[in-house]
Image (cartoon, rainbow, N blue to C red; front, side, top):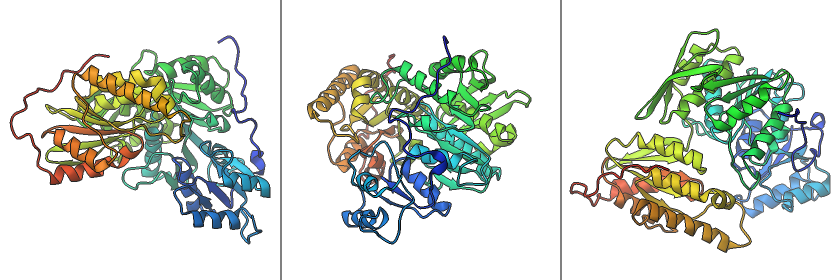
Length: 508
């Protein structure tokens, strides 16, 4: 590195309110059912704060009543202490407009999270240290693993994440312990507003092209984040990922930061050996300095889960948890919803759900799901997410799907932000469909706007022993339920031996 980068404000400019003057006792949550707003709202509620909020999924009458009484249009009796919003909220949103007009302080979600995490100005007085998990991939699973370890050993952590533990269907936990664990979103650069004591970065690469121009842009922004962490902070990175490995080199050149790497790559501070993947179980051995080797048993397909578990064990060890005890706690880890969790089985066909939308995630999840098939095939219902992601990574997404899946059903693009030129989305989706049909050598499974018809089509294409992977974001989230119903109520049409053997996997 030629010079030490300086911490700069995130793109929206300096925070509107200084952190030491933020009052979160009566917050109004704008877009309270958002992916990270929902667990933040739940956490504040569990901690006893008087939360209100609005969301586009609520009835207009309720929204208007809350906007009137809470934000003070007519001088309601209840007055909020601040309004919390995320980057997904447009600048002309009525709640934002009203809050500005009535003088209610506006706080970005990431800044509110930072206030809660920081012991010197946080509302959780018992918290003494914070762990923040950021990066391009693996955030939710790694956050969930760290939180699960601390919960299981009785450390009573405070946890907030976008994913949800599979056993409780929640992403928030308000313990009374000394550690705050949080998933920190980097998609809009708002992670620059946070300052955890321990930062975990499982993977790094070009993602969220609506925000970042390149992998170098992602790298530079994550480097700025690390430069703004507390002086005695520790950064934990995966040595097996090209992006985090490169970041580790730059971070180790900085004074003050403690940098720990883990993985199978030579020179990793915490070496990983014996990685093995058998059906739905991945295992490996982590060698933490000063401790006996720790055998890791990750309940779930994919070697990346062993790497995530290693990061979680290292983070827990920095908070005083014996690595062997942490690994034992992970043996009962329930997994995270939509992160390669089996949804059920019907007619000897297994349905698995995946959140993957980026080529790197798609490749990893397809490889993990392939291990579940045995002699069966892998059918995929994929819904692309985000127009800029599809335009930027469309060819890579197509190659990943074509190499990893035997048959594909392509669903319409899911996006939160409508494009002023819809033909751009149609063109990108059409290109992906053509690429997939050409690469696989067979037509795609016909898709419909009706999820039940999509489920029927998938069930008809499936044979005993197959695995169907519902992958992506949007309507595909609920497809698994319809699919299981179709599998269990409709007889499979192929009762004769298969005429086509499973297609050999293609190379990218």
